[in-house]
Length: 383
Image 1 (spheres, rainbow, N blue to C red):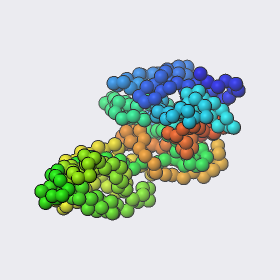
Image 2 (image 1 turned 30 degrees about the horizontal axis):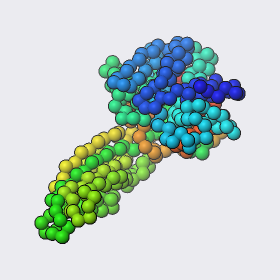
Image 3 (image 1 turned 90 degrees about the vertical axis):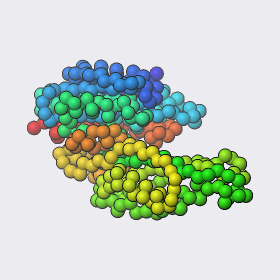
Image 4 (image 1 turned 180 degrees about the vertical axis):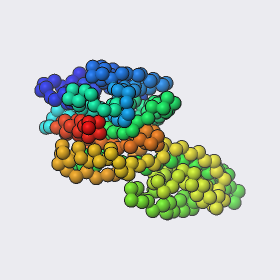
């Protein structure tokens, strides 16, 4: 159900319709059917690609090169305590110029803007050069194992290459278009279990406290300069997120300690180098340990090219602001697309309320975003 007291623009109305669907990851809740219907009406061929419990689709209009793609996700994070919301999270509401609802900024507003941009663009330029596509998943906010990564694998198997891609992640800071993401850092997680010998605290000579052994190693890891970064990426960071040990009793030396940490790394490093340097430090401290690594994504970067030029120009023409390029923030599904050689940027609404209670976006900025998307299409696909 949506708030229809006041009819808004096509972009706003589609955003409200999508927000009204409780598509908590990996559920799609009918969002993709709504998008598919709109895209079929303007000449897109739809290919549904479900994997496991995840809904995905690939939509394409045209068969010629170059291929421009919009990428995004219909799933959202859980709402958190609903009683803390000003209005029901899946009952979109306009209040003081803002659209409230889970997914307003991340990223149902972007999806709506993409569709309405295509509708206007194709109406005005039905014989545009190249092809336009949509890659949509319901698995971005979750494990991200059966979503974009699987679709990309299928596209690569049949040599279907995306030349340019705009991901609708909420990239902006203070106003729509002031920041675009032209890359992301890599993310490498680690679960470390250091082993000792459990015993009585009164007889430490008969035990081996793994906490005492691991703390000096963690101190070295946290003070290590992993890299200096470069003109596009900040220095690699190391952060401990969890430490667990002990039986709960004050008189028992634990037999093991578990530590979870993460590296956000620049293009100056690769995961193998980080693993080796980490394990060298652990070995230097004489630890007995088990270690499990999880690579969530490698760093990727579009440093220049036609897509960045078109995006910067589009933002200037629509919003009359200068945009900054950034690689800050977490990971996105761009990590599955960019490594294939695709020029990729992320452009979406302001991100100050994403994943929060009372997620919202300025309603007028969704229309501006749609105009930006349309202008990017024009710059790249109209001679």
